[in-house]
Length: 311
Length: 89
Image (tube, rainbow over all chains, first blue to last red; front, top):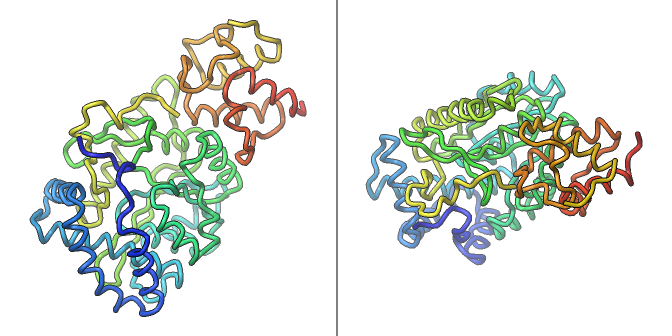
């Protein structure tokens, strides 16, 4: 059985990441991007599981899935990771960003009820953060992330933007404190962002169709939105190559209703709609889907990722 | 199952009502059993619903920065003890 995403080690090693980080800070983006070619080749050779996952995904999205395509996919991923440094250090400066839905976002801010931004491991989350924070009248933004997953990267990026790091709600903390922190931020009218495509170990999941096959998605974001009655906005930050990004914010639900008796069907309907939007954007930009593991959980032999109602 | 004190019983009723637990009666909740992951099978979102109901009923907030949260939410008894210590109404 292949490993689930949280069992995979952080790539690159401390020295490698530090080197790229330092190069980026000293030499700028165009020069540092040259190093992504050998980096991509290194990961293509070293990370067999990610390589196979990339090819499966590309094929399901109807994209070419040969060696070059898989390498291009990994190169896109490496590019967005590198760009995090520039977004954190200089904001959107130097990038060509096609942003859609900022007006809608402003209207949602103006209601003062808080907003839950649901993204995915697709494209760049950093470009979304940059735009969501710099939109006119934007309230503070808190992001739910498992800091433990990429400790070296987390530390390096925190050194660039300490405030951004402080605004992270660490999802690897005690679950009750995590949901209470989310709720407190939303009640103050803040934006809270999380990624809705991956469940954490022990989290409750439901399978919904994604690219023609059922894939397990976490129910947490939707039960949370239901409990708090806040508007939900989907957001995608697609990397289009060069210095171009396309950012799309779209209102998904003004209020999520989950009647107790109909909770299962209501969740299925919401999550199917969410997965369909993800699929739509993934087909637009196949090399932006950054779940380099068995996303459909097809070779699970112990029901991992399909847990019951855990914490 | 050990006996519930009156405040514990009131809290059990609040939990059943706020979570709409149709198959569970307040009497059946063991005050010392784990609230989450155990027989009741509650999750962290249920914890949030409980926290919201507690703040409406008892007039104080369960806070995310309380380092004892894991203990406070460990059982009906622990939660009730915490509420009785901090309630304002």
